[in-house]
Image (cartoon, rainbow, N blue to C red):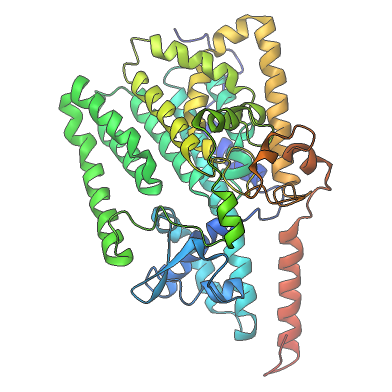
Length: 468
């Protein structure tokens, strides 16, 4: 049953204002929170625009400032005599149009400043692109939730998803693959909640899971489960569902074979760490232990970083029992399989990152589960108070991630967490407490852009041939 709309229900301007508000919030820290994992995605648009290829030869070494070998080469590999990304390239290809003017601007900078210009523009554009993708996922999720809930409740849960989960501290801050996956899953929910028999819905569902799998191959799980769903319950829409899967699958296969020389692309891959780290970082926790860590670890637990997910579990139970949403069980099975799959990863904690990065992908589903029980929570004062407290804690967590992390250096001190993953269970020295007590990070982009233009002005004023 739809909850009663109240007089404060959002109006037609909600969608653009919501997107704009979130982009502003996501960029309010005025700094990058970058990772070596995202370097290929950060640089590939420049190669596509200025070189017309997917090779990183002209970019990766000048950007890093070191020879690309040994420690740190895990994110690129040699193929046919070129450096190429080990990660799927769907995300950098899709965002390339955003880089047309920035890439031209970088190419027009003085040779003496080209390296600084590339680094600064690449990191700035990464932040802007990531925040735009994250904000768009919130908007799409809001439109999806409107199919089953009131505008007010949909907006509330959309904001919870956007600001009280790692959508803020992870997806909006750097071009991790999580942001693109969240957008795909939000689109999937929108297509399914329209009704599987609605015109075009099977196509949009197929497109969303095809893009999710192309971005992160493990999510072919959802494609397989929904194929079974359409084959069993909505066979007339099966061909629409399969069409984008076939097209995108063929394109990915062509890229993998022609560029990487491997059917399955650059993943999985061995990490090129020093020997002692390689041995200890492949810590084989039990699946149950890792799953417990993904949910309850003080420095990676989903229920610690987003405690409102407890209410999502209630919503998941209601979805399993619901007859109207017959696809719900397939989504729930997919979520459980993904949880177990991530628990089987040797580095289930996600390396150096803020909180449960791997589970950020699932946030659109968890938000959807939550909206199913919001009316019941609203009607019960105790539950309502508990949700408010959970949301306050989750919002504080994201503020810590956006404005303080990686201050305090928890990931690497007193010993690297990849070497000693047992630190993930240390309640006396958690990532959250260490980051919170560290000073808030400086607005790095302001200083760096100011320094760049000052340097360029000094270079131009000193005449031809001057060096910075």
